[in-house]
Length: 420
Figure 1: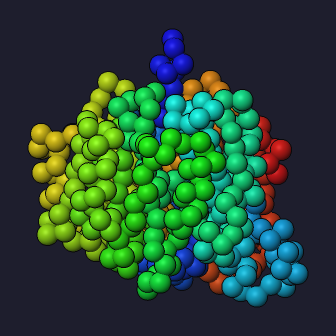
Figure 2: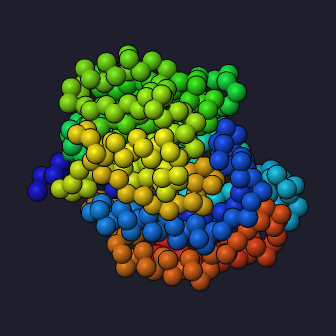
C-alpha cells in the first residue's frame, strides 16, 4: 500500500468532560447564552457523544478521541492570584468550563500532501476571544504532542496575541481524495460588529505560512457580517466541506461569487451546494445547526450528512434536507444523532470533532477507538460523571473533587496518566 493509500480522515471527538455546565459564557453563541442557568447533565452529555462516535464507526469511519481537561483549571486561577476556594463566581465559571469538548476548536490541521515538508501540521488554537476558552490551549497542546508524536507530524503552539485563532471551525479543505493535494480555505471575520469576530485574518495567514502551504492553493475568505450577527460565531455554523463537496448557506461569506470562482479555478471538480436564504432563513440554519453537521464519505459510500436531531424540528430545514437527499446532487444520505446537551451549549456534531487526514498507524493508538474501547469509556462515564450540575454549584469544592476523580479514572482506564 502506498503512503497516499494509507491516508484516511480520522475524526477525533472530544469526550464531554465531567464539569459540563450551562454558565452562558460564550458571547455571540445564541444557544449558550439562551440556555444560561439551566441544569446540565454531564453524564448524559458524555454518553451522547460516545453514541455519536459509535454511529460514525458504524458508517465505516475511523474514530479517535481527545480527553477532557483538568477542571477547575487551578493553574489558571493561580495565575490570577486566586484559587477554587476563594475566586469570585465568574472566575470559577470560567475555570470550570468543559468547552474543550468541542474539538473543532482544538487546532487547525493541514495534511502532509499539502505541506512543503510533507508532514501533517497541527497548530493549536489560542481561543483568546473568550476567557473561558483562552486557557484551554496548554492542555490541548499537551495532548496533541502525545497523540501526534510520530515524525510524520509537526505540532505547533498557538499564534501569538492579539490575533485570535479558533482552529478548524474556521478552516475547510477540499480535495479529490484524502491522499490528493487539496485546496485549504481559511475563513476569518471582520471586527467591529455586534458580536466578536473570533477568527483574525492575520492568524489564518500565520497558520498557513507555518504549515508551509502552497499560496497558489490556499484561499482566505471573509465570513459575512450577517452570519456573525445572526449567531454564526464560527464558520462551521454556516458552511462545511469534505472531499470535493462544499455545503454552505447563501449568506455564509462576504463575497460568495468571488470565493466560488476562485475555488472552481483551483478544483474544477468541486460541487458547491448553496442553500438559498429564501429556502432556509439564516436564523433557521443556525437554530438547527444544519451546517454544523459532519459531512463525511464512508468507505464505498456516498457523501453523507451527520445532523443533530434538532434539524428535524425546523420545518424549513427538514424540507430542504428531504429534497436534498431525494435529488441528484452530491449529498445522498443523512444520519441524525442525539447530542442535545452539547447543542444546548452551542455545539453540534461538527463542533465535537477535529478531522486529521493521516495514516492511522502514525497516531498514538491510545487516542484511537474501536467499539470495545468505547464500551470502556462509557463504563467510566457511567460510574464517575456527575448526573447533573446546576450553575449555583460550580464553586462547590466537593463537586470539584468528584470531577477530578472522574477524569483521573478515565486517564487510568486509557493508560494516559501522563496527562494528569
